Length: 202
Length: 117
Image (cartoon, rainbow over all chains, first blue to last red; front, side, top):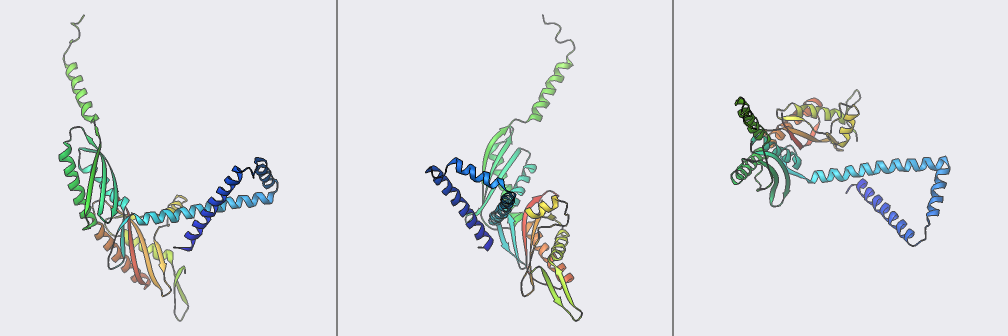
């Protein structure tokens, strides 16, 4: 573990302990609101202490920012599929695989929306998809086709031999607005083609 | 160590890490199927601030002057990722060896995303 990460962890542990202790002291009535008020008033009274407090605040922000970057970077590194070539290592971010799957929605017209979540573990690559289908879709046939296409595409693009498990959750069957609008227009046109059709009614 | 350094009879030649990163970036972008070189938080912020040359390519130079490069990439949709990664590694290696005579230890490719071309 890098020195900076250890320093960050120790810093956060100490800060949380200090806050915890302050809360305990406050709960036991050892620290009165007036004392806090006096302390804050004293800190604000001189320019020197205000500068020190301001610089401490800026330092805290910088430490938090750097620490968050280290942690997030670590998480990002863990969420990858990796393989080694003669020149070095190639890591593919799982979000890249998700991007790839999301593009499949454009290939299959019956799929209106597709939200993938990819996990790589010992079992292989697990793809969970939440899909919104158009109303005319045959679900068993379509989901089977989607699974096949996704699996083939991942194998083709990533060139991995690992097992690929694809789980599909049909979240919604959307009513196609374009079709319904066309139908409405058609009905409207039909009605309008009959001249003086409404005149006979009382 | 921030720079690769070599000495000849006239003086010292130093190649800054940014130069290695720039060569790697250009060599990687030359490959068909590479949409662009990816970004990290730092380079993203620098790009917002108007520093166009900032790239997220990480360069490490060991004490024995071996270079390790880490390149984040965004690949175009429809291309085979391992093939593109391999070609990028080869092109970057060739470019660095040709332009700087450096000894390349590793060229690591990190595919961050896929975008339509």
